[in-house]
Length: 171
Picture 1 (cartoon, rainbow, N blue to C red):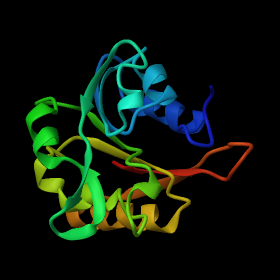
Picture 2: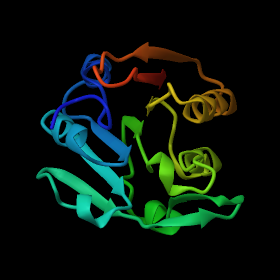
Picture 3: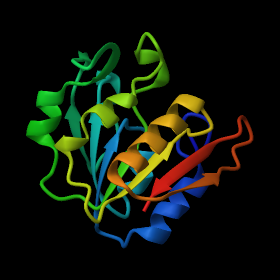
């Protein structure tokens, strides 16, 4: 496996290396090959809904949280809020929003669950990265969060050969 397509682009990986000092903590939504590569430099906590991805790579702190409809919008499936709340680390330096997969909600807006649950997270001095913002719904989600927390974002282009990927960073 390599970077790009369904995995964060190498440009996203390199941006994380550029902005986050080594040995810091990353809280990510959705795990995979990128998690494995990030865990070589950082302490990674990965919230995952799909049991087949649990414990796939060493050095990752997996948090299994099945998807459930959120109370604000029953059409949006997101990670079980109680499990997330009880298991995320007390401190983290970067949040990577790369899950749940787009197809897990009836209206393909699963990542909006993060927006509806921002109060669960400490966001002060935490960089937030959103993968797949070439998709309008993911871009809109990032912009909504940027406005809600009153912080600026920047969009970067990946160089995946199979599809044009973009990621956004709220600094």
